[in-house]
Image 1 (cartoon, one colour):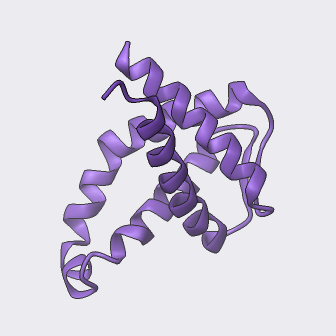
Image 2 (cartoon, helix red, strand yellow; image 1 turned 90 degrees about the horizontal axis):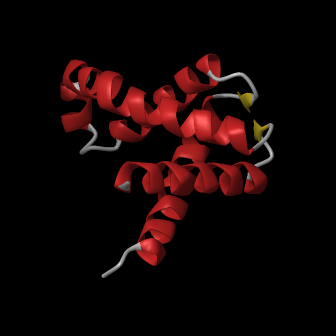
Length: 113
């Protein structure tokens, strides 16, 4: 049940982030749900591989390169999900930062603690 709630919260966060940013478009809530699921799978499977491959750059930039990895994951998701469009790397980077902040706030509000 927890995974489904996190998926719904992430879809809502993606919709809100797309509403706030002019360079990102999501067609409807079903697309946002699919996007949340695809992002979960990419973060589970692809992101650890990218982190290991780019470890020297991540250490050299004191972890800031992880933002670039997040943007790459967003661009990859944009290629996989029909109805989700990102206008470029800069918008993917901003989308990942804003969505993380909104997602954190919403998870904090939805938690039982």
